[in-house]
Length: 589
Image 1 (cartoon, one colour):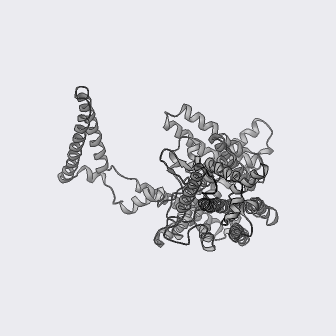
Image 2 (tube, one colour):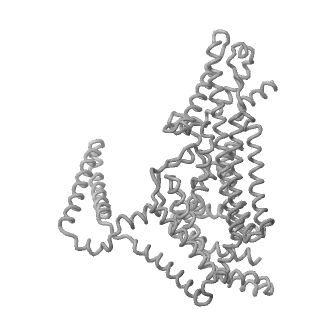
Image 3 (cartoon, one colour):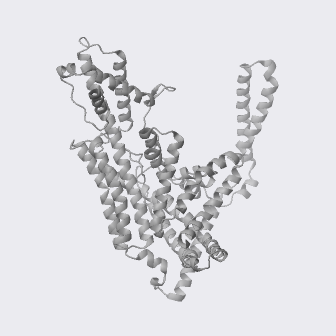
C-alpha cells in the first residue's frame, strides 16, 4: 500500500512527467488501486474547480483580470480638460434659451411616461386592493427622482479644470522662485545644491548595477526553458532553484549597493525598490508557468488513461466514477488552458509562450502579474508620451525643490535630537523636527505617488501599447486602511492577491483571515527592509505601524461604518502625519 501511495503522489505531482501508457500490456499489469487513488485526488480538486451555482468549471486564474481601461486621472480629469473644457458655463446656462429648457422638459416628460407604463405593468401583477395607494406614492417618488437625475445629467453645474491648471501653475512658480533665489546666490553651480549632489552621485555606476539587476531575472526564463526541454522537472528541481535564487537576488543587490558600491541612500532605495519589482515579475512568471505545467501534464495523462481504459473496458471492470473523474479533469484542464491562450496568436498558447520575445515584453509591461497575453492598444500616441515625459521631469524637479527647501534642513536637525538631555527636552526637540518635516513630507509623498503611478506607469504603458491602465483606484476616498492597501497600488495588490493570499490558501490550506494576516505580514517585512536600506537601522517602527492597520480596520468597520466622512478624515490624518513621523523617528532614534 505504501508503494501505491508513493506512485499516486508522483501521478498527482504537477511537475512530474507522466509515464506513457499507450501500450496495452503495460496498462493491464498496472494496479487498479493506483487508478482509484488518482481518481480520488481528482475528485478533491474538482470541488474547488467546479462552480456548483453556475454549473460550470471556473478558471483558478480569474482572480486577476486585465481589461482595456484608462487611469482615473486620465479618464475624469485630463479627458474632461482636453475634450470638454470650454470656459465658464454656469452663466450661460442660467441664461439658457427656451429651446434648451424645452428639450429638458421634453426628456423629463418622456421619462415620466415610461415610468407610468412600468408602474401600470407592476400594478397588474399585484393585488389591486392593496397596491393602488402604494403604487401611486411610489410612482411619484420615482418621478421626482427622475426629474432630479435628468436635470443633473442634462445641466451639469460646472467642472474644476481651471483649478487643475492653477495648481500646476502654482507649482511652476514655486520652482521658478527657488531657482531664481539659487541663481542669485550660487549662479549656475549646481554642486551647491545638496539634493542635486546626492542624486547625481555615481549615477553611471547606479545605471550599470540596475542593468545588471535586470539581466539577472532572465534566470527565471532559463529555468522554464530547461523545463520545456525536459532537462529537469519544475517540481523536483525548478521551483527550488527559483526559491533559492530569489533570496540571493534580493540580498545580493542590497549588499552590493550598501557595502561594495557605497551608494547614497537615494540610489540605494531606488535599486531596492526596482529589485522588488523585478523579483515579483520573476516570481509571477515562474509560478504562473509552473501552474500551467501541472494542468498541461494532468490533461495529457488523463487523456492517456481514458484512452487505455476504453481499449480494455471489456477485460477490466472500471467504475463509472473513475471515468467521470477523468472526464472532469480533461474538461477543466482544457478550459483552463484555453482561457489563458490568445486565440489570435497561435504562439501565445502554453507552452509555446515560453520564448524570449514573450518574456522580454512581460519585463517591459507595467504589471507585476504574468499571463500569456494582455489587452493591447493599436498605436502609440506620441503626444501623450511627450506629455508624460514632461510631467516626469517636472515632478522630479519639484520634488528636488521641496526636498532642498522643506526637508533637508530638518533632517540635519533630526540627527542631533539625541544630543539633547533625555526627557522633556529631547521630546520637545523631536516634536519641533517632526512638525517642521510634516508639510514637506506631505508634498513629497503625494508627488511620489503621482510620479510613479500616474506619470511613469502611464508613459511605459503607452510605449508598450499596454491597454490596462488601472494602476490605482480612488484611494483618496478610502475610509479604512484595508481599502487603501487595495487601491493605492493596484499592480502590487494584484501580485499579493494571486501569489501570496491565494497561494497561501491553496498551498497551506489557510482560512481567509489567516491568509490576510500573512499578506500583511509579508508586506510589513518588505517595508521594514526598505527602512533599513534608507536609514541603515532596524527599529521595526514602520512594521508595527503597518501591522496596526489590521485592528484599526476592525475598529473603523465596527464604530465608523455609518460615519464615512469622519472615517475618511481620520484616514487622511494618518496619510498626512505618517511620512514625517516615520522619517523623524528613524533618523532621531
